[in-house]
Amino acid sequence: MSPNPTAPSVNPAPAGLASIDPENPWLTPGYPESLMPLLYPEDPWDLAEACGVLHFEGDLRRWSRDPKTRRQRSYQDRVREVVESRYHAAHWQGWKALSAGVLAMPGPDLPAHVLHLLPPHAASVLGSLWGAYQQDLLREVWDQVPEDPRQDWRLTILYPPFPHRDLDPAPVPPLPVEPAPDLWLAWSHPHQGDMVPVLLRSVAAPRPLDALELQHTSGWSQAPTVVECPLALDQAEAEPIIRCLHHRQQGIWGNTAPERE
Image 1 (tube, rainbow, N blue to C red):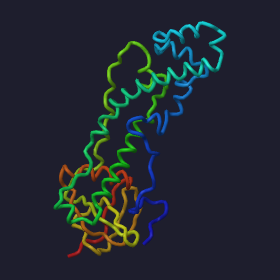
Image 2: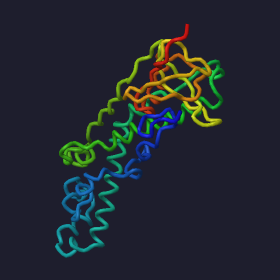
Image 3: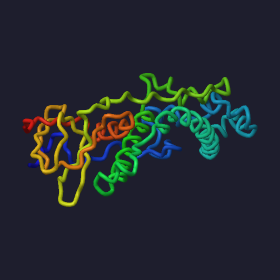
Image 4: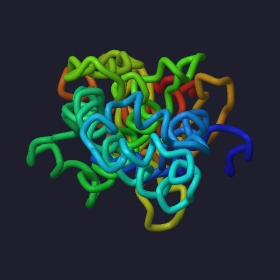
C-alpha cells in the first residue's frame, strides 16, 4: 500500500540540509546570512583594525590613515583579502574544536557474522545513512547563530585578546531511543530490488512476508510490502544505527498488527 504523501515513509527520506565541508564550512555552505553584514561590511577598515590586522600590516595601516586610499576600491579589496585570510585561520581553529564531538562519534560497525545475516550492501546503506546524519548535525552546529549575531563565535574569535581559548565541542544530541529487546532493524521492499532499513518497535521479531501494520510516532500509518532479516537493537553497539535511522525516519515505526499465536 502506498504511504500517505504527507506522512513519514519507510521509503528513502528526502535530502536533508545542504552538504557541508567538514573542514572548511565557510566554503560550503558558506557563512550564515545573518553574519554577512558583520563579516563583510561595506567599509572593511574598522573591522580590520578591530581584529588586529592593521597592527601587523604596515602598508594597510598607512592606507587606512589616508582618506583618499581608504575610499578607493582597490585598497578596500586588498584589506578585505587580508581580513578574510584572518577569518579562515581563526575560524578553522574554532570550528575544529566546535565540531570535534560530532566528528568523533563512532558510526555503524557490525561484525562480519551479523552482516552475513543482513541483505547485501547493508553495511554501505547504513554507512550512507550515518554520513547523511553526521552531515546534518554538522550543518546544524554551523548554522547556529545567537539572537545577537555580534556575540557569535565567528566574530568574537577575531578580536583581542589573543590567543583565544579553544571553543568547547558542540554537544552531541541525546540518543532518541534507547536500545531495547523490542527495537528492531528491519528491511522493507518499497520498490522491486530495493532493500530499505526500517527502525521498528515490535514485541515479537518481524518475520519475512509478515503483513505488518505500522504506525509512526507522528500518528501516520503505513503497510510496507515486506519486512525481513530483522536485527534486534538491544545492545549499546546499536546506538549509531538507532541514531541515523531515527533521524532518517523523523521518528520510529511501531508494529500494531495483532500478534500471532
